[in-house]
Image (tube, rainbow, N blue to C red):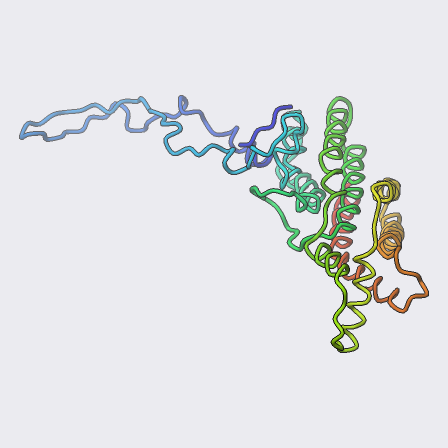
Amino acid sequence: MKIDLGYIGAMVARNKAKMPSVHEIKNPLAGQQVEVIRNGQAYKLTISDEIKQVQGMMAIPMEKFFHVENADPSDIFSYRPRDQWLVFSQYLYESKYFDSLSNEEVKKVESILQHITDGVDSLAPYPGINLFGISKEQQHSYEAHLELASSTAALQYFSDAFLSGDVKAGFDQLIQDYVRHNTKIAMNHQSVEERFIAARAKIRPLNAPLPYEQSRELSMTNKLGKTVYTQVEIESIIKNYQEMFGSIQNKEDLSAVLVKAKEQLLSFVTKGISPKDADYQLARDFVAQRADDTFKRIEHYWHLLLQEE
């Protein structure tokens, strides 16, 4: 599959395919005569049926919009870092999967794909056009791990539930390409707040007294900032999430998995703080509040998937 930077969704492509080519357009005035005066002399002109098509005069290369200077030819998702759903949509469109679907059904499928990749799309380290993006808050590292695992499982669920044969095989390969593209990004991602907290934790505290609440939060965030997570630990937690989300078959499963995933996330992030520490519960509440939007987004697109089957 070759990426088409001009592709912005199946509905647009479907409507574009229905438009007549310039050679099929007929001039309704063709053959009619008009009289014009030039230098005092009257002339009769016959309107031609020929239509000229001007191309490229106002064109701006699509590469300018999508920052493909950052793209890797061996990584198809690097061409659509902020709209990875379009890669899956283009594949389904070119594979004729959408041909048997109504416009409403096409919109539903694309909406599901948009919501699934939205969280991971927001992790893209370089700028570019974002045609769909809902996610506005910068994610923390632990949210990125969760998003990668959940979105991968959701894409696989979509494939297993709605695709078959060669179309499914190609889609499954794209999922593997998606994982390969996003794993390094997710594993190395840190929010600005996380970097700030980690840097502040290395600074010797001032002797000046702080209000009680500020003092407690500083103590707690310093402990989070000093916590180190190895690559092996990050890979392990992502794998655990993938196994959990991969087991979802219905809404009851989803509810149970979300509860379990939240507990694993909180335990992972606060691993450097003892449960007996006075800051332990404060740290859990701090992390839970920051991860709340991600859990809501994940729950939403899984509900979309489960209600469509």
